[in-house]
Length: 165
Image (cartoon, rainbow, N blue to C red; front, side, top):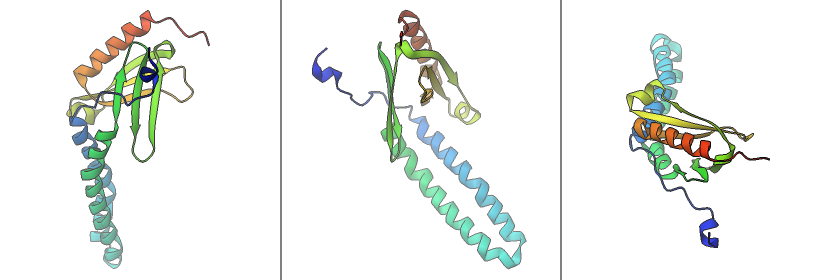
């Protein structure tokens, strides 16, 4: 391996494009609950109407703006890759985090599909390691790719000798 190959580089793979819509739906649902509560209270409590409806409107506009902008930004940042040696994941928004899980440290590989993920035909692969930092998560994968990835990781880790440290 040459020196250039040893340098840390961004992982190659992007998430499924449906992840953008999934994140938008999460933002909108997260925004909808407090906006609905404030709007209903504003409609029912006349003396506090302005004090409730103005924040409801501001929160709705902010939530909608975030739902439009943030998922696109996240899609550009989030990356993942699996090699025979390790799982690489880059996540984050303002503060980016790179996680590398050597195959010899992987303990379990799981796939998870919450209700909203199922709606968008997405899955999350969770790679549990012997790290105190916790599991490595690859969110926003197509469910078929996630199943294939979990199977591939299982085969690679079974063939990889454990770390003696």
